[in-house]
Image (tube, helix red, strand yellow):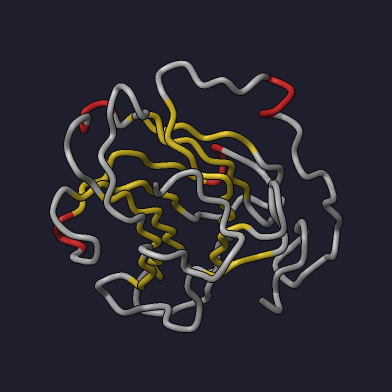
Length: 193
């Protein structure tokens, strides 16, 4: 089973893939882990990059799995950003029915901007019911130029009525602090990651 995935072991986890976008911009940073986790000791993390000539695009792709009514079709995960300041990073979910690493096989199914979530972990759900019975790969894609970072943790596949309670959803990591970086105030210093 590919899920749940909490990124507690080696990275990327077995069967996952991590790579930069087709434009080849932003080769100094890619998906890795961070100790700023929602639960456990690690989360998946991709740091902002200051690039020229376009946008850095970093892909983290699941192994192939098949959503089903029995096993689940709602992809849920915890997510947060690094900085209090709103920049212009974009956060995408893509799906491929073809391959894990051929970018042209992927279709965008969800888009978020920095105003959609904050520096505290919050629950994100993506409906994959259109793919019930179809083997797919799901990609978490971060796109930026000197913008914000992305942490994701505790990815799972659930049915139509997730069992999380409000208390579980909002029991976020609250150990944020102002470390006053050059790009403004931010939570949990990741500049040395």
